[in-house]
Every structure is written in C-alpha cells, then in structure tokens.
Length: 483
Image (cartoon, one colour):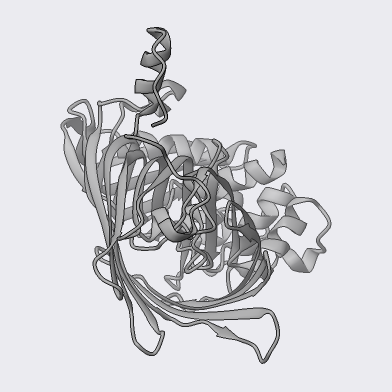
C-alpha cells in the first residue's frame, strides 16, 4: 500500500501537475438505490407496498473513485512508483507529446431520505458529501528531467509548459423528488458548499538551460497561479468544513415515461460556485531559479522545490470565484423479461457532457436482475478515445442494498496487480491508457411500510402525533386515547 500511495504522489505532484479531477460513474443509473436517487434527483428510491418509509446509509460511505493517465509517461511513472526506478525509454524529446492525468473522488458520508406522500411519490432527502475534481497536462520532457537530463541537450524551450487545476469541497444540502403526473417526475437537489482547497497553475512559457560543468541548471517559468492557501500553509485542520470558502450548487432532473414504457431522464448536475477567501494567493510569475546537483540523489525534490518557488514568486492576497464541474446528462432506458425466466433486463443509453469543459462521454449500461441479485455490464467511450468495460454486483431488496463495482475493470485489475507486486515487467509499459475505478455503497430502509390504504396492515388511530410530541406527552405523564 505504501508503494501504491507513493506512486500516486509521484504521478500527481512530482512534476507539479495535480490534475483537475474528473470522471463519471454510470452503472448506478436506474438501480433505484439511495445513491442513485441523490445523484439523479428525479429517480425514485422507494417502492409502495414493499419499502419502508426512511432510507439511510447508516454512515457507511457510498463512494466512487476514478483515475486515468494517458501518454508516453505511463511506463516511466509506473516504474518509479512500483519498481523504484524510472524507465524513460518510451519518452519522446522535442516532439511536443503530452500526458493527461485525471482523477475523481465523490463520497456520500451521510444520506437520509423520507417518503412523505403516497399520491405523488414525494421524497425528501438530506445529505452530506465530499467531492474533488481536477485534471492536468504535462510534457514528456518534464518527466525526463526528473530521471536523467542528459538526453535533453543543453537547452529546452517550453518543456515545462504545464497546466493543472484541482479543487476539493464539502457539500451539504437537501433533495426533493415528486411525480408531476403519471408519466413525468421532477427532482431538485440544493447544496451549500464548503471549499477545502483550490489550486491552478498555467505555465505559458518555460526554458531550462544546463550548466553541466557545474552540475546545475537554470529554470525559467512564466504564467499565472492561484491557490486558496498560503504557500506551505495548508494543514489537516483545513479539511474540516467551515464558512471560510462558501459556495452553493444546484442539481435538477426530469424523468418521462412514455406509453411504450421507455424512460427518458434529463439531468443537470452540480451547477455551482465557490468563493475562496481573501487570504488566497493570486498572481502572475516570470522568473528564473537554479536547480543544483543534477547528478546527485533527490533530483525530484530539488526540481519540484525550485519550480514551486518560481510559481509562488509574485502573488498577492486576493479572493476569487471558481465554478464546480457541472454536467448535463440524458438517458433512455426500458425493462424486459427475458423469455419466461425470472431475469429482468434493463438496458440504458447515457450521454454526458461537461458544461465548462469539452469532455463528452457515452455509455451503454445493462442490468440483469434475478430476484434480489443484480449484475451489471457497462461499456463507455469518451472524447479521449478511452473504451471502458465495467461490471457491478448488487444485492437489492426493497429495504436493503449493497453494491460494488468498477467501470474500468481491466485497467483496475492491472493497476492493482502492479501495485501488489504480482505484475511482470511488461505490465509497466505504456498502454492505451492506465486507469482505475472503484465504487461501493450500502444503505437500508426502516420505519413503517409504505402501504396503499386498501392494503394497509397498519392504520394510525386518531390524529397523528410527532415523535417529539409523543416524548413531550410522556414527560408530562399524559396518556392519549387511541380513539
């Protein structure tokens, strides 16, 4: 595990390229889980005459984590992470080839939903979650310099022209879902945001010149920089939610069920902003620093320290505002019984487009349900030309659900095998892309069963009384007649 964490550290930070975190998780579409209901606001999560009235994740984190890396640096960075040595043989110099890492994290720490009205299938939810979003672009040369700078020649222009942007934040809010009529449903999710960290760097001009006789190099960087914290000032205490970096977001969705039993969903997800505090750092940089000891151990740290000093060399205190990674999605699905078996088949087509970035993804999700067991096969494709195959296992009853899966099954298994030390040397070479994805969730439902009046086993007697009211009556020693 230490090797795996170190590998992620090298990948994300060694060349100052923490990514803007991005990924999508499609396999939960049309599962009617609590997680699905919060991610797709118009989705129904309760079943009348079967489910109980309150859904809760019993503080079990329902999460999705995703990582991808494409480009020639895959071999070099995987070898550095898992074999403790760079393999720069597949890096190209002077050809302007770039690498693209992406990472995403989304975890619901608290989910609570109430079924409030049988006539309109109204549901009201409360939730708390943590998100991170980011991506980066960096050159082959910026990795080469960390291992052996000899192949770079005496000078390299624009070798360190990198871009990265990442942010993390807490999200707390409520959701509302109802049927408008028998065919149309509407859902709304409102959130208060509490920013944790934001950092963006855009190096527009760079140059590195080697003085090999004195075993040093001169690094020049120009561009712009912003960070929500003082240089070196971010601590674990900043992870705790506070009003220091406030924001808000909205999600909404519509579901339409046609007469032919086709279901269409339209979702606008996480359209929002965060206002970062006035102690944040913002500025432009154009400066030169010295990297000492090119042939000595610890070159990675010295390159990183010099580059950080240049990035932070000319900034001032200032607040700024960033957007959240809003997504627009549309889907179409229907359900079928396979022959006369007890297997229910639900295929779903999904199209997903980011509003503020160019990313586009499409997915084909296939749910196969036999009694309380659901198996899912997912195929997705995006504008990075990644073809992903995934699978999900789920146990789902009206009042219990557990799921685990991956939307990048082959890549996840390969990276896990490498991290655990069971992979051969060929597994450390460049692939179409390196990636990993894992998601898991658990929730239960409790309370009285949702029953239509004609089928009800539980009939409340007399006027309803809230829980607090019943406690108050007991404290006063008052008993209420059931009639």
